[in-house]
Image (cartoon, rainbow, N blue to C red; front, side, top):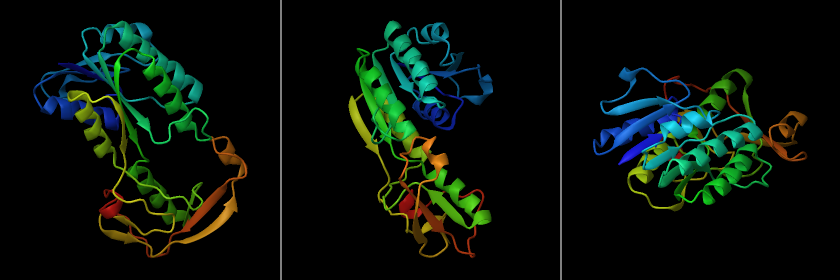
Length: 260
């Protein structure tokens, strides 16, 4: 089976390429805006240039492909949707039989959250593609929180529009493994990817087993005007998670324990 992967230069797409190629049972095509050096990939992986904004290049690159692993792009919603339309239309025109697509939990075109909006519209496009579609709906990446907590070392707080909500974090590596599994064993339908626990904003965070602070102090504030531009409803709430002075961060660590 020939499997193409979009966003191959990114963290998730690149991992999917290596995972599928590692099975040595499929021909893998790594798609990116620019052709990456051949030495970057395992033997048997071919690289093709096909940016989301180039419908002709996408159609050419997808000829002869059986399954497309579609890792979505990023940017303003209108631009992202135009790019996703290009990818899905090219896949259909090129005879791709199966699309394994990365989406997000609570994908909804009516959501106040910008990413949920683009995921919702993209899932509608996929539903009308005529291809078998397997959708991996991922929760928020745990790696985002390592960045939040690293910045908290300087500011003393993490500010998130979370209120009293709970969240189940998942690593990019786990998401890549799920996409690779869907690519080689088409299942169809939606598949939620979350962590084993869903802690609230007052939880204990840890980096590779090192505790970050003690129980975080939480206080409520109205959302600031700047948040409205990022897709959150005006009048929502922001949580200050106060990180204590004994925070110790390992720059190379990832979230461990129950938060993976």
